[in-house]
Length: 114
Image (cartoon, one colour):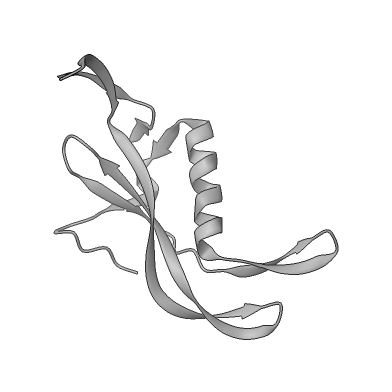
């Protein structure tokens, strides 16, 4: 199923009628993992992206964990954390405006698996 990440619903609140977003994305911090930085082995956190429906309270987690890694930038290796990598994907999703739930798992009883 493909959803429109920019879908809104018209609701009435104390300010009158407003458009509320149905879906929102967030990055959640997971477990401590071993990583390789430009300075050698270290520890960091894994991260996941969660898609939430504000009105139904259903949540989905992307079938991928984000772990930091070294990237080349202007001829130097720099460490990029998993949260930055996840934020990059969220930016791409928002730009595309669509999400294919084929790549997401429904969160059951609030149990997000890292």
